[in-house]
Image (cartoon, rainbow, N blue to C red; front, side):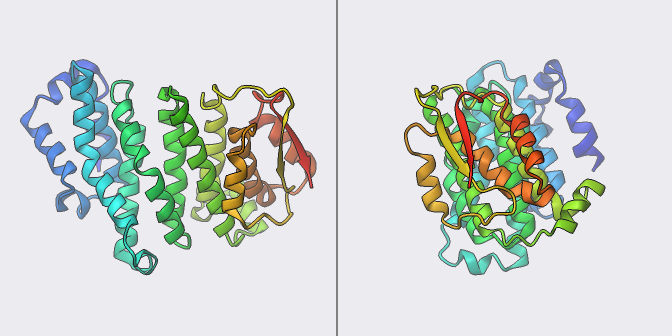
Length: 318
């Protein structure tokens, strides 16, 4: 544990050390073992240790002189994990497989590895990571639909979305990539909202304030973090203000949410709509009824989370 959480992060903290580290045969052997997802990693390390190890391995890429080498190194580290996630999402019996504890553990480990990769993003390795994650967006949505009743998997998917937005969004320059990432985030939140049975009671919401470490509230915290990071990101840079302000509609706290996720996603893609605003509104529609049912608090939260887009959106309550 100390190796993954203390020693390795220290070794990759400075570029001169990284230059020496990536040239060591022992480091190369460790990276190869991790890339092949051998039992020494998948069976003997916990989920969180796998995430910490992946983060350190990815950060070590700063030791390569050429960006091409760094990108090839990171792609090699993650290719097997990415392929495993994509292959699992294609299984015809995925819903039945989702009930098995061993499959749930496997998925949690792979999601933690992807979280570690996102947290270990560097400017030099971002193109490779964006390429890998772009191919995973659809499979991740498929996994969410299959594992929607498996709380640990759902929480990790939300946290992964937050990690991707927080660490990779700043490097996204192509408008198509920005739109792809925003629409994926929106669809993930819509799926979560529609599959969430609203089993988190108001008493549970109170425990969020009293004990923020409670496992039963981890998905709500992930949604809140995602909303914060997506409004602080540059993903809305290419959204041009419309001549007429676009109207984003969301039910107020306590009102019934729409169960037609596909229709809502299609609506989000309509010209003139602000996708980033819709992402935030869907997230607020999930979280706010469980935190505070007061309309004043609702509007206050909107003003905090959307300070940069007052001229783009007009909110109407139904």
